[in-house]
Amino acid sequence: MAKVAAINISETKGVPKDTIEKGYFEIDCGLKGDAHAGAWHRQVSLLGMESVNKMKQKGLADLATGSFAENITTDGIILFELPIGTKLKIGESLMEVTQIGKECHSGCAIRQKTGDCVMPREGIFAKVLIPGWVKPGDEIEIVD
Image 1 (cartoon, one colour):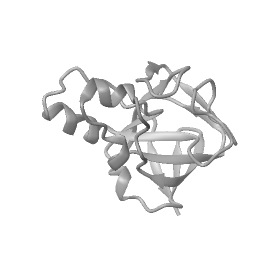
Image 2 (tube, rainbow, N blue to C red):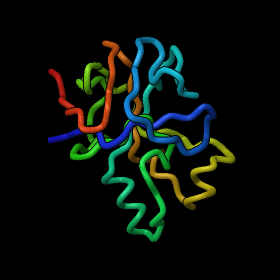
Image 3 (cartoon, helix red, strand yellow):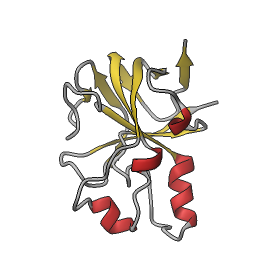
């Protein structure tokens, strides 16, 4: 079963995010209060624990949820294999996958800290279709 491992937020772009108890995801916004929130196609970033663990195996043992600036850290789902347009019910919200991976911006604090950033290859982005609260332990369901 796929589930939410963590919700992460930051006030600044390009830095690791802090883990929070729960987050409210708004339409045309994303995670309320997050630096990346806004009316664009990359409202919410998601990365799997599988990807974080891959980087830990490369010797980056101090990585935690939010280290790659993802809003939602997932567990039990291979995110980067989902086609664009896939709808995901996450907690109370419904999101649609809009992009797989991204180009890392110059001066990225994550790349500087880790020497590599897995987000460009394995992170995904989504927009919020139905708003709601999301918290660790919530199930992630692919909706037809």
